[in-house]
Amino acid sequence: MFYLRRGTNQQEEYAYCYLTSMQYLKLKNNNKNISKFFIDNNFKRIAIYGLGQFADILYNDLIKTDVQVMYFIDKECKKFTYGYNDIPVVNVNSISKEPDVDVIVITSVYHCNEAIDELLKNGKELESIINFNDVVFGMESE
Image (cartoon, rainbow, N blue to C red; front, side, top):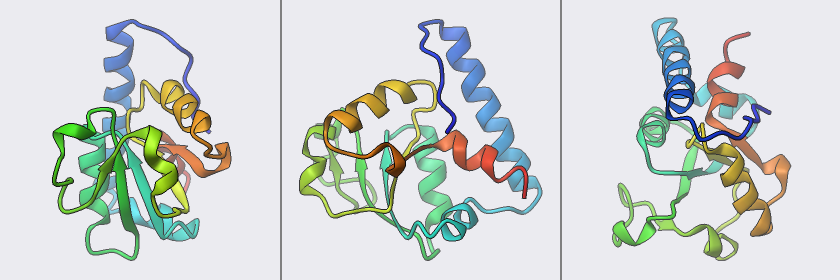
């Protein structure tokens, strides 16, 4: 698992996001779709943690595939009263009420550690959590 060390440096955060973005573009330039990672790992029903740019990228890559986004998890879920693209947006504290998913993908790549801590506190198993970096860098070796 791509587990980041904790830090507060904004330049470091931008660097992580830049590296992730460049790897994603490399995959796209090689005609690879992120959905392959999920299909190959038998992840058919997923939840996406965070509603930033990487969440949008992931969601758009999974539209019209066999991978179903069941719900989004975001601390600002109240901003999304009607969901996001007709998919529910829930607070991390209420995920136990949501349908089971095969994996939760954390798209807040720099704040991954905090997200993992929150998910573990709310009863999720570490094995059911991956970072968006695990996806984009995991496909590199294929």
